Length: 248
Length: 371
Image 1 (cartoon, each protein chain N blue to C red):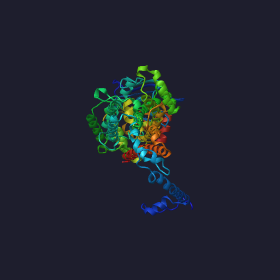
Image 2: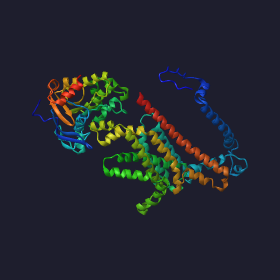
Image 3: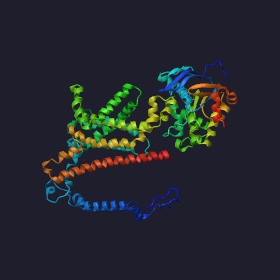
Image 4: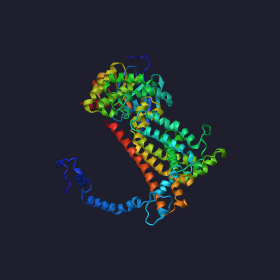
């Protein structure tokens, strides 16, 4: 790990409340450039909330979040600039159903990056090629399988040339036979050196791809460890309980 | 009849083509209640149709120099009255030698509307742009007059008839949709002042009848602006109708915005699109498509509500019919009735056409999605 380079994402003492519910209770986490982080934990532990704070889909109420040297605050322009550099893949894909696959991929480069259309199309086709669905470019999302839709969503995020990619349970809404194609795409992306923060229950993926696994429970980071230590030698009782439940 | 047990064998498939007899059996006489209703309706039609036909067609007066023939005992509908008064119905008191200007305006407008509504036509956007940006000033110059271009001014007090109805409806439709979208977005805004203003306007306008909005526009608008620019008597109801319709439109659009899954807006945000870009490219195209029936419904209501502008002195089509029937040469009970039947037909045809068009658009869109 490169200790001297500034981190891609730095989270310090972050708190978040939903009404009376204390969702994040003082979270600290640094993610180095090129690092792959898998965040695991029981549902309701604040994993999704945490990564949604990184591109400010949720607003944190205390603490600091710095992305690529820029601190997130209420400045809309700054938040939009950070979002352009942080790609996100959602559990429910959230493709735009009224646009074709190609148009989905071109929308943000054209309207947020102000690239000329021809250039945006070139980029979109390149990334569709990379997630192995170039032939679906002119279809609408509803005509694709779940796995294909999620790969389009990954391509759509990549078209913005993000510095960090956030994955919010990207395989949880998929039929089992489609999980692998999405995980393979993500593993490939990891090999190419992308900085990735992945919330997932796919522990095989964590073992294979992650540099560090972060275990969260009740809005706190309980344990951070490289996957080999995390799975074979968890230090905390709560981690052990969780692993016992999901690794049967 | 027994209800089939859920686990029982499937009933045999119903043949798709049964012929006319089979169709009637399946749709008109599927049970004793449905059969009775069918017979009742047939009896009702058989009882009414001869009288209606006799009045509207066989006993009708088709050609007459004045109302005398229509006042004869036993005379039916007085279509001669409609034929005689058609120019007045269409143009009001617009000077006869200038009426080509109205014709030309309507023709250009109709061509542009047709071009931008024609489903599947190429470059619909260009036609829509011409219609919304270039057409209004051209139409104004043609109708009101532009002495520079050799078109004498025709004051709005002479305007009337179908063309005023169309004008009020067109202005209402053109302004209510964008205003309604802005109000709906404002109502969901996170900025408290914007939200309060939007909610206040929408709730106030929806809480009063159109007729009182029109009276207010008529009486209050002149109070707010210097006397020299006191708005024209026709402009006031135009503003009133547009504002009224936009409040209703706002609520229709809001329904569409709320029906959209939250993930759509979030995905647009996560890509770094600005709020306006996200609304324009992701949220509104989907939200507006969802509520096309509601939008067209508002347009239809608006079109019929144009008849209320008569209350503040504008001579719309219905008022023109009403004025024409008071012509002493054409007074008589069947004449007035014919006039109103004709007006009813006119409004029905216009609204029915809008409704069919919206159904066709919905079918197109659902087909595009299901591909």
